[in-house]
Image 1 (spheres, helix red, strand yellow):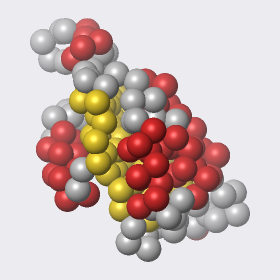
Image 2 (cartoon, rainbow, N blue to C red):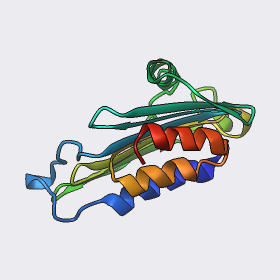
Image 3 (spheres, rainbow, N blue to C red):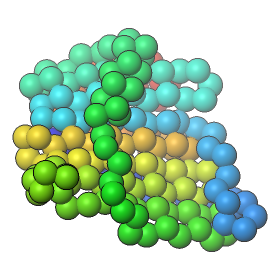
Image 4 (cartoon, rainbow, N blue to C red):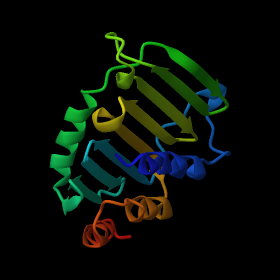
Length: 181
């Protein structure tokens, strides 16, 4: 699994945060306009779904380092099914809300069987409508993660695609073209 890609997606959102766009009393605002970036990674499978609030959508799948364009509806189905695989962590470690900013982190080291390889984590960050949500569970061959980013700008969406190591140059080019980037 490409953990560098997962953390790069979180960095994209943090870089896009706008300090001036905060709601009252720490309440996060609705999603900022722009691009929504989704990626799911498990073992040797990755699903990418990038959409713009103007209606442009591109999706791709990587299996065993082979990438291909897929239909957005298929990507949504896969992402929805994969999201159901995650179990909620049993305790919340951090919950901060202030001036249009919110951060929530929860996790546990193992599942109820005591298997340390099945720990889970959930991180949610929102600032001025720019948000990132990360779910991760397990590690090694059994690990899986999903990242959902909202309010990304054009440069961030372009970098998200170009920095995806396992997408072929042809798939990257087609996704960028589909999105008008």
